[in-house]
Amino acid sequence: MRTIPALQQNCPRQMVGCMLGLLRRGAPINLSYSPCRLPCCSQLAIRACQDDGRDAYSTLVAYFNSLKVLGGALVAMQDDVPKTISAIAPHRSEDARRLGEPEELTSRKASSEIPKILEQLEIGIGEPGFIDILLASNMLSVGVDIPRLGLMVVNGQPKSMSEYIQATSRVGRSRKGPGLVITLYNNTKIRDRAHYETFRTWHSALYRAVEPTSVTPFAPRARDKALHAPLVAMAIHLLGVGPVLSEKAGKEHRRTDNTHHIGKGQKSGRKRS
Image (tube, rainbow, N blue to C red; front, top):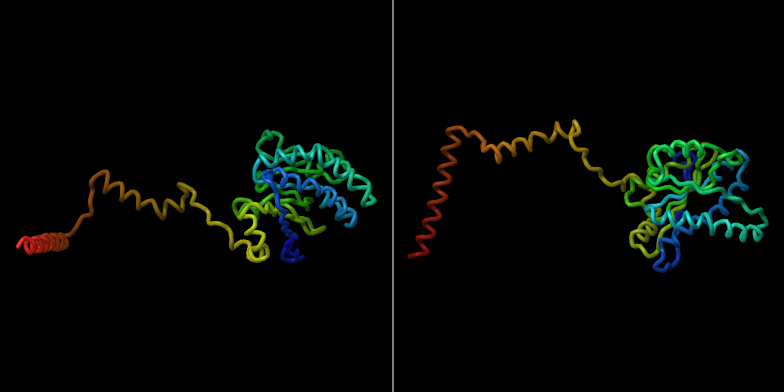
């Protein structure tokens, strides 16, 4: 396990990286089951916090890189997770937490349902309409600003570093307590192993690893800097308009061509003799 401590002034989030054990070919499905155990952990975090900080860790936000893995986790949340919580709770001498229906924030939802889900995320624990578990795709990265969210699980390293930064910054926006971000890495994927082994290194300079973005086509600045080059190229090749040379430059150019042809003839004559 790799951890990056959350500093009260510089970093509002605690970053934790966990490498899962050896998995079989069903790794994506097994990976989706891992965050299903975290409602038990969030229950312990809620009890350990003070009354004003419990709400930040009551909603589990699970981020997935693909809808396929998210679908497997959704089935597990509805069937396997309640049974697991009921089995673990007696061993910890605590009451089993009753989970509501998991909600998802993906492209499978209609656009009219998204504002309703965002309004429900602002509802605190114990109130009607409270969301226990939110399964999200990359839709979470943009336009979600809910200060009360403080617990997130990232299933596998996202495809880009900017996506990782945007997604994990959705939690830990409240002053009541730092956010907790747990990234689950798959041992069978080389890219996940590389990020896990250098977890502290690239987190210490997170924005340095952001990939360069492409230029937006026909943006005003892009047109000012680069439009003249393709226009000149099109005029030369399509319209047959060549560069206008001065009389002196034209003579030097023709003289150079004649010398070049004479040199070729002398060389060929020597070879023939």
